[in-house]
Length: 471
Image (cartoon, rainbow, N blue to C red; front, side):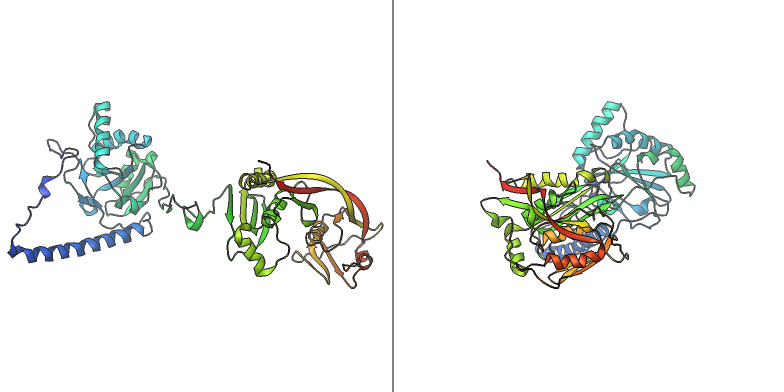
């Protein structure tokens, strides 16, 4: 604070009052010098430790009593440094700012006027992380432009106070009451005479509390990975692709939410599987039976001979990938199309296309007059093996998708039942056909109990073609 007639240290001028003459270099003082430096180093270590503990601790909250903060180097003030205890009995407002911040600069005249209007009762201290010469050169130009000198105390080159209060944006104001407690953290809109008068009267000012917990972030690491910049709970849209991730069980899922939108997740999938899912929209489903590989080297795309650990080893040799796409609700219908674009951007050596082909199929239909299957409403589940099929609270469309994916019948199954509701169904496989697969006649005997049947027929189906992209 400036007092009438008081001479203040000029900007960029060192404070010569605190310069201590060096000890003469004599033998009588040599031992003391070494001992003195040992003590100084120990004190510096303790100071660094204390500063680190306070800096990385959880940011203080309104109502917390603050430690005895230090403000140095301090210019435009009666001393070159000060502590929080020096301002006991006053309202202290810390202004975290930067020269590039337009709202910060616009607040300088207002803060200077409030400083003078409440002289002796309120103290503003502007705190900048930028170096002293940069801040003071800027202030000299600003004062020349405004034809006015500003009397705000300044701390420059700061890291300690910034790390203590974690300003998430600038300007950032920290209000400290007369007892040294944190009263509020606000934006520039709340810096006014009315709120200051409330603080002086012991009342809570009508302020808007700003977020003060800065998220740690490293520009050299991916955003949100390992907590870098947050935990990701506020994601609106993201798309990511990684290589094989050890310990992550292969699988895929599409989750639809009426509020958050759609999320597609593929864990340790092959390129073949990624493309099959990406093109399975508009009511179609691609799997082993309706996907054709027209590439020179199929070993990069699919591995159908290995299982268990050998298959995981194949994925780990550059053949497995994790992919995730999350989009808001209004983009949900375009999610798989966006996935296709992502795959085309990364897997530049391959091209996907769709052709139509007429081939022999098994048609799943309802028996005329038969009773439609229903569900008891248990947990959704589909289990298929060589001994039979068990469906609980799932649709027939899902059953057909699984039958085709695992190629449990010689021909692909097409659902033409028109039944979309979940059903319960149990079909034991009691005998095999001459070809070694399930006997269709025996299966129809079991399906008849649910008013269903499998009949051979030809249908035109869409086939997914994966081919080498021509240069």
